[in-house]
Image 1 (tube, rainbow, N blue to C red):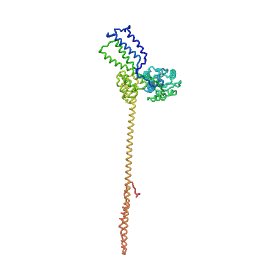
Image 2: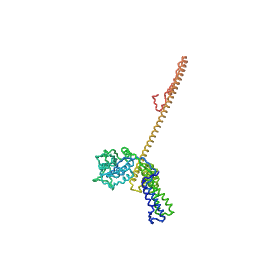
Image 3: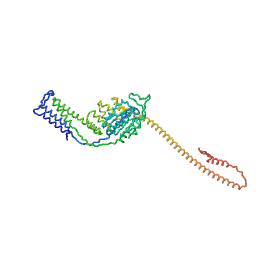
Image 4: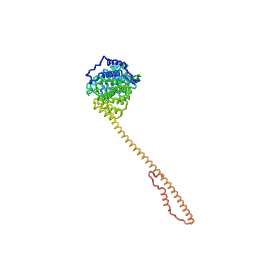
Length: 535
């Protein structure tokens, strides 16, 4: 159903009486009319054009409905230290640039309104509270630090300025300056210390800051942490930012109903302007169809602003899928770029890369290449990310963010190669040691088997010796029985001979036999490891 937001605009139709009153004729300058046709017909065309313009002014809408929105009411001020000590290079590329990088991380992860300040010996406001993250990043990136002259950092002046502005939560990105005592005046102070060791200050001309012929070395001042509700030394990762937000900035939301609708005024406006053109000019019949086709295309293109506004609202509210759907309805490189950004926010890096690659506009090419580098880096394709950043820097060598990311990834690749080389060496040593241990274990196993075999051989020899001993003993018994039998025979023979009274001398013929038996019985060959005493 079509509704009109400004229905009182129809009162303007009263002026149509001027077109049709008999005593009033519409005066049209003949010079404005290309072909002198029926002036009365022109009058009707202009009247119809006027009606369409009034309808457009009444602002017709459709699909009117109310939706609930969640608005985060949390607010915080970020303060950047821009004193000379922030030019120290103990963190890459220097403390000031690193602090900006950490502030961008905070802006990305914080849902609420953010104000940005800068301070050294004085404090000043860069941006009041806003939820437009792109604007905050742009202002932060363009803080001009080329004219830094102050070497001091006045935290007390910063606190007083914040108090006057009515801010209650303040996150400071600083190296701590030379603060010893500080009155926070009821301000909730949160500090991220930038830096990690004493370092010289490199000035804009490339020279090092010196005093009395000696190079000035600046360290971080941890005294500031005593007065902060939260304080940490900033790290290369975003864990410190996540911790700061999760522990201290819980989301405070307010539910609010807003009315949304689809604007239709563009249609009567387009027809009104077209009829106004025909009212003053005559178009040849041959050109009229082409003009009508152009009008239809122009009408379609005139709706782009509506989709763009809706897409921006969806993007800023975090509804990236809806933002992508709306941007996809517009066929130009700028809309493709914003659609790719929506996909990037949804972590659909593959689709974002497709859109970034399809952009041909020279103004967006550098930004597209930079974002492609981010997509590749998020996907773990470091080599492709490095190549994308290098291509972006060819177009805009002054892009500090692209240079920062490029140097960071190259450093990561270098460390990765060193770690890989180190791991390979350790693995080689480990494999060599495992091989050596395996050989030693095999040698031990072989020795064990050999010892077992020797033991079995020894056991077999022992059994053989016992068998031989048993055989010898049996043989000795047999020999004794034979000797006893022989003695009995000799005894019986003597008795027979004694019957005769004759005495006969007998030679000891068996003495050799005794010797032989003794020899055969007791003289045994010795095996290895045995001694004569055992027998």
